[in-house]
Length: 443
Ligand SMILES: C[S@@+](CC[C@H](N)C(=O)[O-])C[C@H]1O[C@@H](n2cnc3c(N)ncnc32)[C@H](O)[C@@H]1O
Image 1: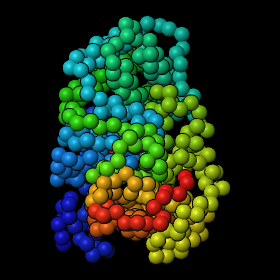
Image 2: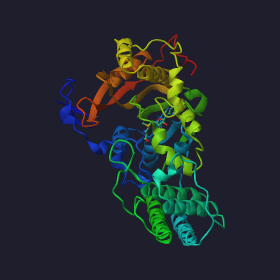
Image 3: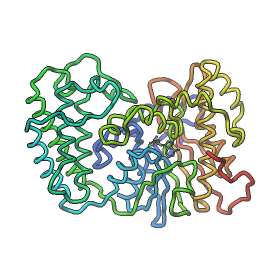
C-alpha cells in the first residue's frame, strides 16, 4: 500500500478494490459549495480533487483547463487567487461558467431577490400561453400546469422592467433552471439523468392540482431558488482573473489569448458513450442555446466522445484521418474486439483517442516548459473488453513528448468491479525537444 495524492492506494493493479467509491471525489461533493452547486450537472468533477491539485501552486501559477464543463477548475482557481484560462465547446457551459466567475457588485444578491419577488407576483396574473421550448416529448418532462407556470416565469424574466443591474437577469436564469429541473419528472439516482417511473408528487409535477395552486408552488420554489443563488454569491467569491473561452481543445492556439500555462488540470470527456448534451438539453432549450434536435446532434458531433442524435450516424461515415497510430500495445486489437460487438463502438473508441492525440499535440504548444498536467480519466468496458483508458492516455502523453508520466488510481466509479477513475500525471519537458510530428493534425 502506498500513499497517493488522494489517500492510501494499492498500486499492484488488480488489488484496487480498497479504494472504494469515494463519492466526495465526484460532483456530488460540490453541491453545497456556493456557485459550484448552482446546477447539478454530471459533467462536473470533484472540487476537493482540484483543490488538492492546486495546493502546492505558487503565486506564478497559471492554470489551463481545456475541457471546462461546468467550470469547476477555473472557479476553484479564482477562489484561491490563481489565474486560470479554460476552454469549452458547449456554448451553454461557457455561459454558465463565466457567470460563476463574475465578480458581482455587493448589491447584486439583493437585486436578484427583489426582481424574483416581482416576477413571482406577476406569475399569478392570468395571461395567454407563453413561449415553451420545442423539446422533444416535452410532456414527458412536465405536466401542463407546471409547464405553463415555468413558461410564465421564463417570460417574466425576459420582460423584467425596469432593466435590472448587470448580471441580475443571468442569475435569475440560474434560479429558473433550478426550479425547472426540480419540477421535472426526472431523477438523478444514477450517473446520468433518467425519467421517473410512477411516484406521483407535487414536486415532479405528476400529481393533479389546480393550475393556480401549481403556479403558486412553482413561483414559491423560484423565490427560494433566487434566495439560494443570492446567498451563494457570498461563498468563496473569485479573487483572481479566470475566464472560459468558447472553442475546440484540439486547436488551442486558435482560441487562447496567451501561452505559457504552468499547469493543465482537467477531466476530459470519458470514452463511455455518455452524452453531455442528453442531460443538458432541458437547460439549453429553455435558455435558447438549442432550438432543435438536429442542432443538438451536430453540437455533440463536434465534442470529443459525443454520440447524441445525428452524431451517431456521422460516426458511421468516419474514417481515421491519418494523424498517426495510437501508440499503445494491441490498440488495434482492442478496437477490433470492441468492433466485433458493434462496429460503430470500435470506431467510436478509435475516434475518441485520435481526438485526444490531436488535443495533446495542441496542448504542448501552449504550455510553459516544465508545466505539470493532471488528467482525471475513467476506464470503460464494452461487452467483455476492458478499455485501459488510463494506460492509453499515459502512452499518448509520452508519445507527445511529455515526461514523468504516471498513473494514479483515485476511486472506484460504479459497483462494477473493473471501473475506476485515475489521475494521469505528466510534465512538459523543461527544454523543448524538436519533434517532427508536433503540429496538430487538421480536425
Ligand atoms: C468531463 S466534462 C468536464 C468536467 C469539468 N471538469 C467540470 O468539473 O465541470 C468534459 C467537457 O468537455 C467538453 N468538450 C468535449 N469536447 C470538447 C472539445 N473538443 N473542446 C472543448 N471542450 C470539449 C464537454 O462539452 C464537457 O463539458
